[in-house]
Length: 443
Image (cartoon, rainbow, N blue to C red; front, side, top):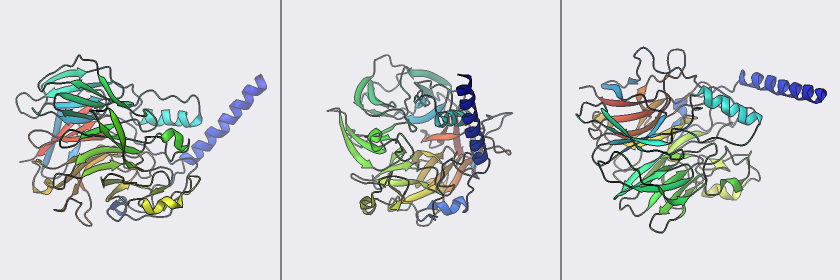
């Protein structure tokens, strides 16, 4: 027995030494992040990794009155603080804001080196805390830009994220099911038991589900990310994942609306064209320059390549068996957001009062990278749009809110969901700083 124990310890020591060796010699970006943004990013040759590059900002929080740094002409202040991992935002018709205080559900899978690394990574990034599993209502009663009333609207959920009110029903996207509860605008607590509308796969590496309603409220669209990086556990476990699902709440049924989206998160209707847009987190372990996360319009039947390809037809040779027959069907995304930025939150600028520069485009919350050197994301950006309802040709993103990393590269916070409030200011959910920031005009 003692020999077996010593042998296991030796194996773990070797594995640990190997991991440290690779982790301290990570793949380093060869092109600037700006080259990986816009409608025509530079797609370089993949640098396949067996052991991933790991570079995630350690969390220190906001200390000594520190705040994020807004773009010139804007100002920032806390709309609400002391929250528990606030991740997503939704404005109700009366101007009340809902915030999903949520996190990943417990991760199973037993003991493995991968799971140990994942746990370490989540803890380092400030995402290892248990999920509060609730939605809180915030109200600014006097219009001064600070929430002076809060109430737990509904608790006991299962890693909730997206929320949408349709008529007198509030729909909530839990990690494993879309549920609904009766709701009347102005109500500050819900005691009704949630009714399940549809179930879909929950948990996995990408656990967060978003939901948005069609203009007439008859259909709902739910973003469901993949369970793994590139379906390394088989495509069977990815059934109804890496998709946007179209849900008919009247019949409690759904179909796949768009596929091949590794981890779609933000969902929003572009106000000029009425098209559905989404933000998508692309794959890891192809090096610091691949593959770019993206913002794209999504239509029924669209296929974006995951797991077999990326950026409109670049085959990922790691995925076996290869499927060259699918390459011609892979749609190229509309706008690259940089590699490994973890672009999550999405809100169009209609109604924004942040100045002429921010009237027609998309605000995007970039949670920040873990698989890139140097790190990317950790800020809120703005993508200008043209009159045709697509990003301005060759336009680069504009930084709206930065300063989430301190001078030593530590994370004071990490931006996720973004939403406009009733005044047209931008609210940003910071799930590590436990704050909702309000960005407003400096005038």
